[in-house]
Amino acid sequence: MVNYIRDSYRMSCSRACRILNLQKATFYYRKVEDAGEIKLRNRLKELADKHPGFGLRTLHEIAKREDLVVNHKRTERIYKEEKLSLRLKKKNKRSRHLRAAQVPPDAPLKTWSMDFVHDRCFSGRKIKCLTVIDQFSKNCSMINVGTTMTGAEVARALDSLKIKIGLPEVIFVDNGPEFSGKDLGLWAMKNNVKLHFIEPGKPTQNAFIESFNGKFRAQCLNQHWFSTLEEAKVLIEEWRKEYNNFRPHSSLNGLTPEEFTRQFEMKKINGFDQDVRLKVV
Image 1: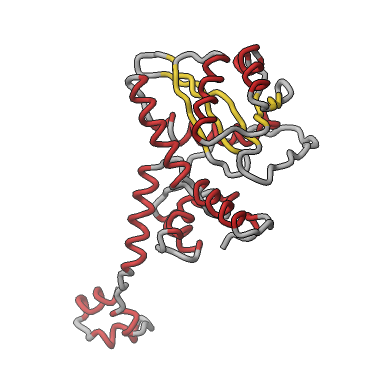
Image 2 (image 1 turned 120 degrees about the vertical axis):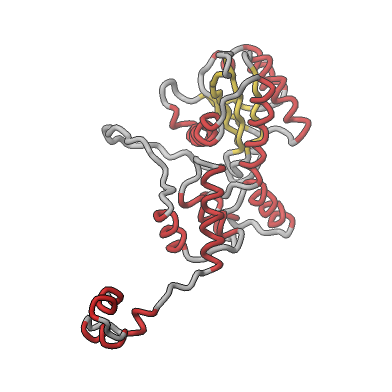
């Protein structure tokens, strides 16, 4: 408006500003680009493009770990300005009911959860993924990918984990034939592992693996169209390592499962018996 008055009536800038009751400093003000904000904005866009399933909280935790931001309000503002919000499906309303809280474990390698996730290759070939996580550290110990998987194959996959990291005291599973069959039952008896079967039709009793499977499908399976089974194995294993070593978890106070496990072991070595979740810096 100031420029219009100056050009139309050949006035000075000072007089045009007085007519509009505008400070000259306001007219001459130019926004100064913040290098830190530009870097943060580019990093958030990069992460959102590479990981479409990451929401605001996860992106902020990653940016905070990389010393790009401290206050969550800046992340929220840029997140909205760049329109990075996830498109979430509306959930149908359900009748409220009392829920029995599951007692969480107090150390790694005590309680695991195990389940299957299904998908298809580009050719239509079925993919069956056996997912195994530690309920305490949220560490994904294994995602075994195949086309079919019997109880004997599940037992062999768990034997490979036994060699690498050991076995838990209890494994939470559903009532599928692979888990309730004779092969896995004999394996559990041989290795002194208790199989805890949830009630039929109540997946919330195995909530840890259900939550993990949701992230696995949204952030990995739905983001790729596998051409072969071999490609699926490679990409899924890459995602599993990224989940354990890169993705921060709000339930672990912003740590990754690997960092949380290492911190717990260090506290155990140093003789601390306090709940590590309450003492994370």
